[in-house]
Image 1: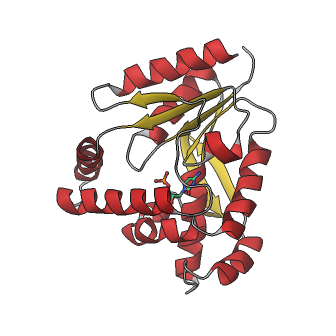
Image 2: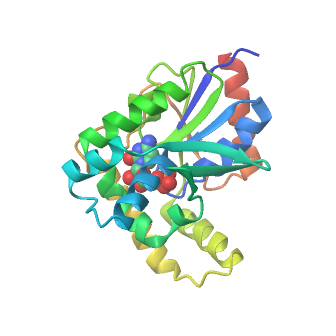
Length: 222
Ligand code: C5P
């Protein structure tokens, strides 16, 4: 099968990373979680007392930051400057701040370049907010994946509870709404459906059904 690029965009908690990872496995493609890259920069900034609202300091920090997306025993790992930060970048402090990091033009330009290099040979499933519109405008397959905000909060809640993390569903919903607002209203390449993207509302679909649809689109696009 031809190694096409599959771009998956959508709001927070829509299940993009779960289905993108499964679709990539099924297709024999590489899964690229671009949100993890914005999170890694945010994590490093917070650790170095750099304010994620300060674009100049962030730019300097990013110039000296290496981010690798790898796999270990079949699960994606995020390595920042040689350190495995896969768990740390999911910390609520990172989640609360990541949309500030992602709002700066200079930071986006740098990370988008890195993402384009990762997809240069094709054969990727890449998820994020601007993949179909800015990172890979020529991707053969584009999907805009969403679900109702209640359903997205409920899924996140179930995930957290399964991990044994005490969680308040109303707080989760608020956090998702805040992040969506920042991501859709920012000036630079805001979260938006690409004109040629297939709209998929997963509110009433199972993970397997969504993966199947993405797989079929990739086969058709190849
Ligand atoms: O996908 P995830 O929820 O981990 O993304 C974290 C944040 O990173 C998003 O809320 C958004 O602010 C930012 N992001 C982005 N562009 C991408 C991927 C993520 O702005 N391509």
